[in-house]
Image 1 (tube, rainbow, N blue to C red):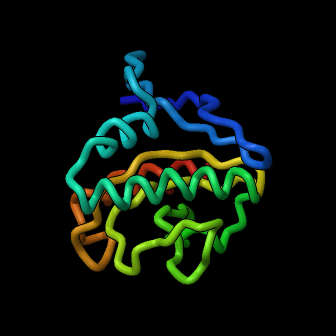
Image 2 (cartoon, rainbow, N blue to C red):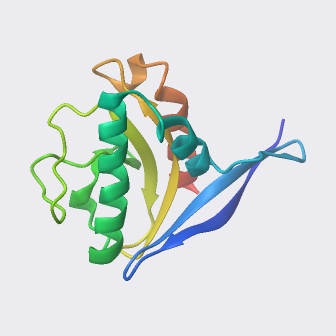
Amino acid sequence: MKLFVLIEELREFDIVKYYTVRKEIEEITDANSEAEKFFLKFENSEEEIKEEFDTIIALLEGIGNRGAKSYFFRDEQMAFALSSNPNIKILDTNVKLNSQLRLYCVLVTENIVILCNGDVKTAQKVQDCPNVLPHFRFTNLIAKK
């Protein structure tokens, strides 16, 4: 099975341009990009997760207008994740201390970020969480290229 990814522009802010990827497996292209899948899954979720989702959206805008500094993200090996470090303030966005929602991404430069996909982390380690592990692994594959 051959997996290809198509890189697409998603949204541009003052300083950062966000891209996403769309999977193509055996010449069948996914209808939605990886970031779109994440947004569609969590934009109407239950209250606690919706709050974390809204924080991620606010972080994307704040980072987009300030620059994609690595300290705005959770460093998870080759990939990075939002939600951000709760000790770093981006504009007026407060990050919940034990936020469980993760959106994995690749920091290409301080001006270019590739958003992938994510989910709710239900275990202490990514490797023990069936929800986020596939997204984490996929993002690491993208980051290695």
